[in-house]
Length: 469
Image 1: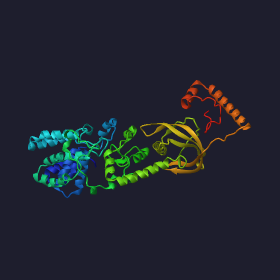
Image 2: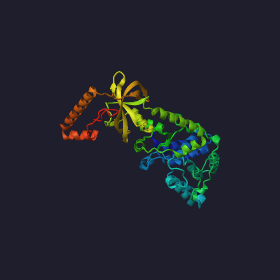
Image 3: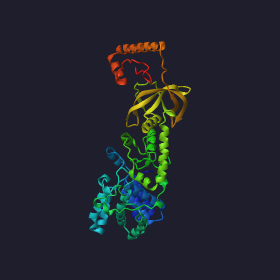
Image 4: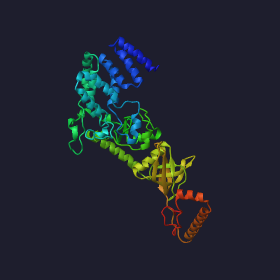
């Protein structure tokens, strides 16, 4: 019924009557979790595990909460986004109230260790960006997990000290021992080999056994291939940069947990997860080399400006004429981004055709600038480059493509050339007369959109594409 407050009241009465019944503490933990009192819920889950070590589902519940509390994943968030994402309901940092309650309960037993516990709290709640001598890179949501694990061994011990029965402490400590015996690296060595300064000497460098590393652990859940340019979202999930961008084209939510990423998308400051990338380089060089080879082949294929050229089906464009575009469809977002990534910055523009999809003739456009908006839309400033004829129609990932050949004007001479010059001058004079007759506000709009009218060309056949006017 999700009446968590009443459920908590009933569970507290039950725990008083049967303090050693795991089911009672489980109900209480569920009620506390529903009320958002995560720290108290963790204690109750630990009671359950201590009372019944064989209860595997309860171990998973406790492990899930401890992972959320001890392993934050917010260091890949832009500074301006830190505050809103840290106010989420999921607990990614240890709350001072929870730690202080542990200190209070343990101070009567430990005595002088209370001061050292405060230092532990400060280290756990301190912003990782302030501990440059400990953290390898603040861009990574994974890079400091091992440091948090080392520190939180002490805190977990204090949680155990708060259990009421000494027998329960011993019983649960045997399970926790498995965590404490894990051989995890406490520090990623610096590339320059310099020894870290300050108190970081207490973190010994350890090697990860190669038999514990598996390339499948570093696969993107979207493309099912090895991470390439891995980035981590504010909610803690890692993807290939290109895979994440394609998902955000369609929906501004995390592909796995559906966390809203609108602010993350608006900033467009994707930072690579350094630790993940370094682990791949170090432990899977062959797989990375193959992955990089596949990526380069894809980029080479997308860079071809004669075969499978991307086509934007919209309006008619002309060489040398500016053509600003408002891009909002996911397929064209992907198309524009690929044109920028390959470095060609070019795509074709054709009119629509009811039978073929788009016309057989069009104009290549070159991207001069792209302005992105928070909702994913963009305004693309382009200018016409060359005319082309479509040889065959196709599609790629939702947008149209074509094999094309470029067109050039045939050169004429003699009487034909004289006729060409006469038509050229006549058209130019008509254009000037038309522009002069416009109202001032219309002139301003045209000048802002297309720029000033070019002068009359002395040689109409000099341009390889067409006269600029």
